[in-house]
Length: 470
Image (cartoon, rainbow, N blue to C red):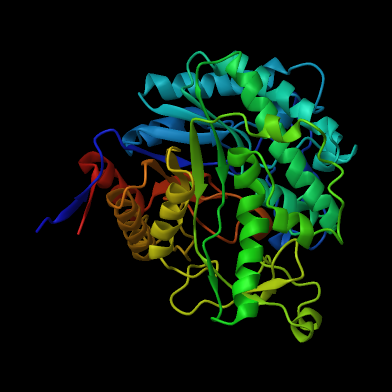
């Protein structure tokens, strides 16, 4: 009997961040506002009125942060590029001062033998484009392609992998349907339009990037592992519906070249899907080299009765208070997320590691030729700094159990080639501001001191051993 779970020899280990969550320097070197800069100024939208204006000040502390990554033995680092830093107006000339930051970042990573994985879009749309409709405006698709080309021309000779979009579900449905993320709109027709334009932006960018870089190309989806609340016909149908609007609205056009017919029928009262032009689906289905999968928790789904619809009016999953209670699923009035029994993270999210195994095997079953990378997985807990140390045993246990779940999926045949722990640093956690800490490195925001938590030291050993001890 083995005392450890060993991963494949070429398995990639890393940690991840996003530009708006850590960089700060919101007005430095020509950067202009993103939709999140504007959203943070709306009273009541972000916990405690927090903003990403300073965040972790990574922009000015890049060398120290890179040294810390090296000390913790990270073989790879996944980060995103700030669109309003590189093309501040969303279109027009490239801001070389902003692009130079990412040149320094990539060069610094390579000097420390850390492999960069670049995410082109992690939610920080330039506000200038939002004024013109943001992702509901088809023109934004081509503006994204221009941005992607600018980044790839600057970095593509030494970056082995680019991811087009991070979690387009959140951009479309939390940004345009529930309004809990920037730009804060509550229009389900707009959300479906945005989802399609995000898909199209991905496909067009993949085709354009093939012409300027030999890097591997991917997209990262926060796929939902769903469980019906009961065996009732209504709850089973609700779970299947949410699967279409949370998962298949992206998986099917990107990997099959079509939208689910059932989804088109279920949403015909919201839109006629006229925003899908001839040729769009062929563009969206541009071949990719791998799929990024972000996973934190599964969701229990129940049918929304008329009574529940009344009770839940105006409430949405991912409320800023992290409430685990029933909440309407973003983008639909046919289902709600019911409480899942058992332990929870500091976000109120259920801890069910086997759900990750099931999700990875589902993707493998549906798309057996497509390699996967777990591009985000981690947990927020109420970390406390005591005598210069953070003993985050709950996080270690969470990651340990989810790595075992990844290993189980690999053993069952899933082609999973890497794992990126979210997050490298405590950071600005979107609508929760600085009230939630996901990092394996504690950030003391007043002093900007970095303190590796027990989880960081534990993860360093996992990487060294390429294995999880049982």
